[in-house]
Length: 113
Image (cartoon, rainbow, N blue to C red; front, side):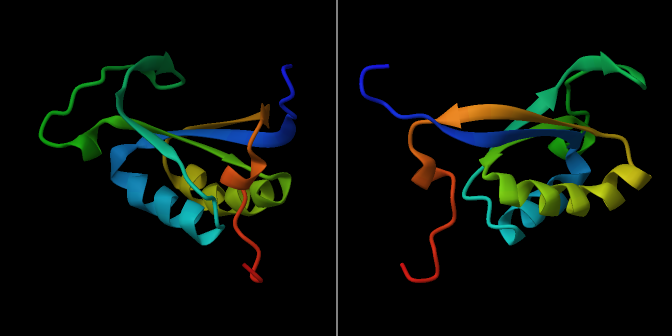
């Protein structure tokens, strides 16, 4: 692959009501995910039927998708942190195997750096 080395990581996609966005971003920050992408106004059909992506009054009333790529050791803390949210509210999460060419972009720096 033209000299690039790929490193295994985990991609986590979380779809939740926008009102819970800060809960999830705080969780990702606390477990030292180095970054995430947020996509607002998600549409789709699922367990609760069709959900239209339009904000009636603000973005907290629509679905939001967060995506992050983390090392394997960060997955369990993220899952544990999301459990109380999913026990009480609607939402879904997907965890996939991915490979990245720059693992340092997706790993928190060591304490010695």
